[in-house]
Image (tube, rainbow, N blue to C red):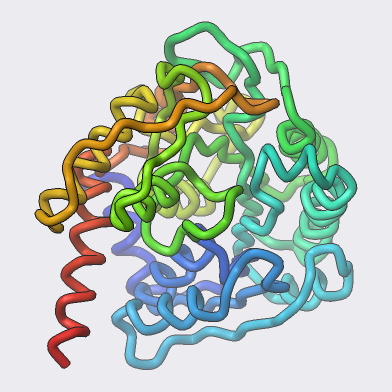
Length: 346
């Protein structure tokens, strides 16, 4: 039995109180779904800046628990009182709320700062003052900046290239000096993807955008020459890392309580597009399998290569990615097609 399976077994027999910020967002709603399925008490906080009520409703409907214990608070992490309200009596805080976009952080640096630095600081202090056991927060691989091709470990010198990356690094530093005895753990997500990732926004993840464009017969755009590489990690593995980090018993060996969360396997953008096209064609044969992309200039702040070394997370947390890119795309595209076919029959 893996460490994660052990933790899930413990949680299924013992309820704790969890706060999930950004509960109506992509990753937040998956955390809500999993925790409710484990019969945990969940307090969700979201202001719907980018999250949606439909994400939250879907999470509740899919949790497999007939009587989910969810209290939702519509509030903003930039409001200290809202942060204190949700943290009162909580055991664990999973802080996912953020303005998640490198391009948008250039377009709206003040909004990036207020959400990703001020909002982070509010939640950190509210959790600390409420004597929360563990505060787990979403950081990002963006803090590494431009690095040589190959796996990146947590002690690699950092070189943030965007306001978004600067904010995420600032949160890591604040957590080191202001946790004051509360266990605080940052998770440097690689490129997360999965169901409920909004494909309609230009700031969304490339997989959700390209999948939608491919299914609509549109021509996807690649920024750069297509040889940029990314470490794409399915949302269920992001959930796994959050729960493992929250339930850690010790800080020993945590390297400043920051961990990479990815698969450790790089994929070029051209390879990714081919994989998406194959997966879509498998479930929707009428959609052509190949379509030449449009090549656009690289965007400001884009990183050439990103690949996680997940040795530390494996050793310390017991983290082990469960889904390959092919399996994740199958779940995302195939699962969606099956759901659509079932709906159309009724």
